[in-house]
Amino acid sequence: MGFEKKDIGGDPLQDPLEAKHSYGMWEKYEPFLDVLPTVLPRAFEDRVLHPAARYMLVDPERDTICLRHILVWTCVNLPMACYILWYADVESWIFWPLVACYYFLWFTAMDTYVLQLHIMSHRKVFTPAFAPVMWHYYVSILGPIFGETPETYYVHHIGMHHKYNNYFDDLSCTLTYQRDSFVHWLTYFYKFLTIYPDLFRVFYGENNKLLARFLAGEGLWFGFLVYAASQRFVPAMLVLLMPVLVMRGGMMAGNWGQHAFINPDEPTTNFGHSVNIINSSYNRRCFNDGYHITHHMHPSAHYAELPALFLKELPTLAEHDVIVFSHPHWDFAAIWFHLMTKNYDELARRFVHIGSGPKRTHEEIKVLLKARTRPIYRRDQFSTETHALQKQAPSATKQD
Picture 1 (spheres, rainbow, N blue to C red):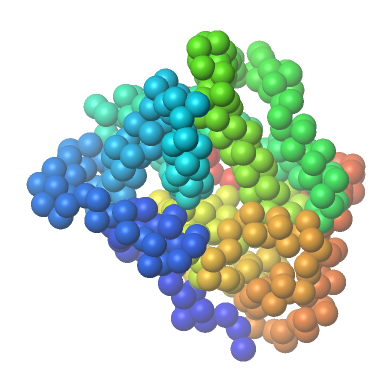
Picture 2: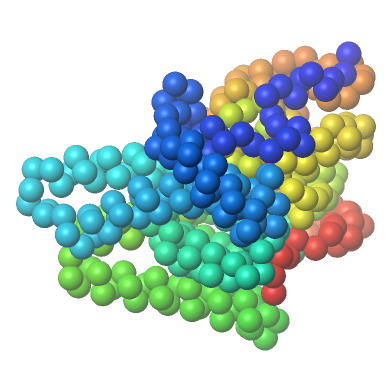
């Protein structure tokens, strides 16, 4: 018996994500903690938020959640960050409890922030009249307090990751690593932290516009960090530096989980280098990011359409023997964690059989998963024709 539509569980199909999931990152802990939506009175949403969304958003029916996120973070996270950075007394007894509260609010929102940045990078969320100012506000004002330096995510993700699809030319490529090795992941993380010379080398002369955006964003952030540290060293480290280090570690763990199980027969196609996670609260709080194979196949598709596209393309996905996991709360960092601990039993238990043929046994699934974490060191280890297929993928770029 194969995969059925009912197996997709609670992931949203076509319908917009409900407003109650606007701060749904609280589901990392328990659904009953999802209380922050009550901060915005119903009258405010009906009379202010939704009318503004109809004026500011390209698709207000499905993307009002994005505007709501920005409003909540502007009213909650940003004032706390500014107060700790410039005004809070480091010697006061209340300072560290305040920092702990701030970190908790930041940590519960960080993945939702970066996945909203992800959809804003791929699609036009705001109308032309508001798009430039909202983009710069999101990446330059909110970005640093969430651990994202201005423009760096867009330059790397659109200018490199989707262009090369985890191929050797992608600086975040996972092919050459033993992907259940913590030592290999630390090497990968270190390479990402010191990526600046390589990014400059790749973009210089080929895409100077993206290079200028990268240098300007990193330069502004670093300059502000140095100035803030010269005024208030400890708060600057806590508010501006630590979130960047943690976010980059989280992103590299997430990217590792997304591209850990690589099919050696077609490692450069969208079928062979990614995995999907279904039935997870992660998809509700992070714009269906679990459908990563489907996203690479349709990078410009609206996030609400990804589950339906996944169902539509199930026969093709099954033919290519793709990896799909199902768990009520898994994200890609969870896959990374189970790989680092070599917990293949749990990974195999969450494996979804999507084909119509005989199901693999638990041990057969473990053998499959282990085989797909082996490194590929040379371009000639696989057919060059498979790399040509990924060149036919639709453009992922939203803006120049």
